[in-house]
Length: 342
Image 1 (spheres, rainbow, N blue to C red):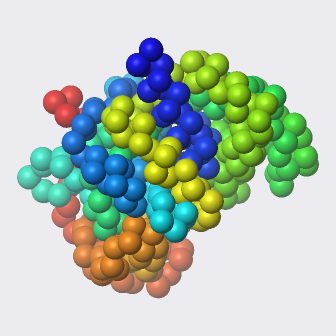
Image 2 (tube, rainbow, N blue to C red):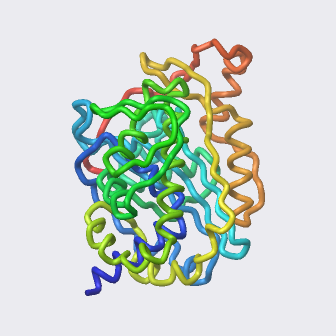
């Protein structure tokens, strides 16, 4: 009963309060995500006292395209919740963002695509990496796999969306125009990336579009009263490091935090590093995001000074030409590796 109560409270919190982020976790994986290590003592007082908090949302690509091991977090989002102002600020982080992998234990600082952090060091390393990139402390993490969105869309009897482009993936095609999608079709709509002229940025917008449609329908009484049955189905597909006590307090303290939601995207510039394609976020882009997130956390703004901003300064000529793809990491380690001790 305690486990069932934990799942109910946690899912209502995720779907209703920070639910605008739920549909983002649609990935190439058909395997459940690794369980996130519990961090029972991280910021328990923040939730109990109704303080602003930050949550990192993760998903893994294990089992897709021949990928094995733990799997990268194919999509990452950071969201801040402020119960005093009833506001939330959410940023989608490009999967190919160049970032220092914090806590890797290498002799030299290791610079990789940010989605590698989860593969190397699970949620703890992903939280540390995102926090260092944006100049904030990341309090909690939530992960959900591909099956959860399909089940949720079917639970609300499908969603209606209008697509500006034709979307084709995994043998299913959704023509340009307005359509009512079932769970499987919704997965197709949010998974296509390479054929979208906007690439991963276009996919993020489609994911947010479906998610908002799901959350809107979940708020209808006929679906709210059936939430326990949905939560029973979703239980194995959701992982979080929120404790039982924190989740019990969460819906009470943060029920209005989604009233004013700002959804944003970090957007970068293409670069080739060590034979791989990366997205480089300018210092202005990083600083602007840091300012917005810290403001919603009721923290004073601070000038970012991290590995990314220092490399950007050394590559000033790169940002002067939008067609330039040469970015010098100035001797930092760019070798991808995994270490199962994490």
